[in-house]
Length: 405
Ligand code: HEM
Image 1 (spheres, helix red, strand yellow):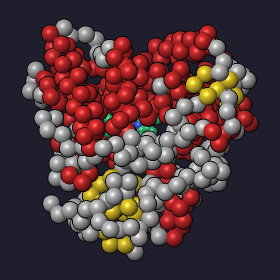
Image 2 (cartoon, rainbow, N blue to C red):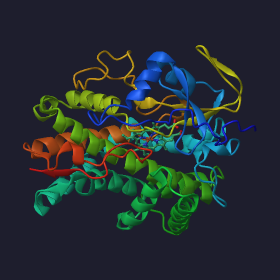
Image 3 (cartoon, rainbow, N blue to C red):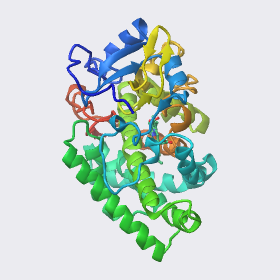
């Protein structure tokens, strides 16, 4: 395949995703609103130096993410890969159909609304547990470490059958992979260690299967020859990695957005209607759109988008945060928990749309209201300007969230 996206001296191009505004850290980088209004597609330089077309309009994002002429195949287009790893199979998010859907289908049954709803009581009891532990340890606390990270991390560990006692190991490796600009060697080491750990676990579960996703993949898919042990380890790695950092950042950033918009927080505090909470969570997902810098693709042939010609071999990056602030949503820059935000693209669009979205929704629907109701005077313990936002990470959010009550 041709690679027309080599890092070159495209220094005259704007950087993607661009700097956030210090006035409203929840808004996408203001420069993206400019691109959206002016150009639709804009050529940018990615954080790894490569050149890509930034897609910033809602309609363009939906159209292009649904277009089979865009490839996510990291084997065919190594420029899509942050890490080249020997001895590991390709991860299915970096494959195209039909191979992508062949692997993805072995997992979808685990993440249906029905399966996830069955987990809700358990998720609720975890939420209560971490909440009471945080309160017992006393105010102030770092909400990320005490609440936002452990909940999804424990949920995904239990679902997979990964011992939660190893959480420091997998959380630190995951964070290394999520940090932009992590040196290649460090990235390879983190990815290799995670993969090795999961491959060992897969072998252990083959000998002693339990009631968990990894064991089910072995007993239902490996024995039939559909998946290899390496495939199971890789699928587990993808889920472990995608399943805790994302939700954790939505819990923490969502809490901060609610603390900064107290009249909106009151909507959640004062209701016990799950529909109202579900609507509010959709709006938070839209408003915050934390997947700020990860949706890259390559055009497999020349594609015309509006006035632009995207040539075969050129890269594209989907600006989901910008797309979710497009005019298809009325007063799109306002957080309005009563609005019907369905149709947002916070989970992406098309064949790679988030596999874990039902699980993420239930976790957010449980974690956010419980926190607000249990601690009516919850507040930020430092000035907003002192909060460290995750501009340096693939997934936006906060590094820490000091709170008091
Ligand atoms: C894919 C966002 C939670 C697993 C994606 C994509 C987005 C996204 C935008 C599309 C990537 C692309 O098209 O290149 C989020 C957000 C979450 C969340 C905002 C939390 C609020 C989860 C959870 C899981 C998960 C809890 C756990 C299973 C995945 C997987 C993919 C994916 C496996 C790749 C799907 C594929 O390529 O077919 N997610 N995600 N995500 N997500 Fe999530």
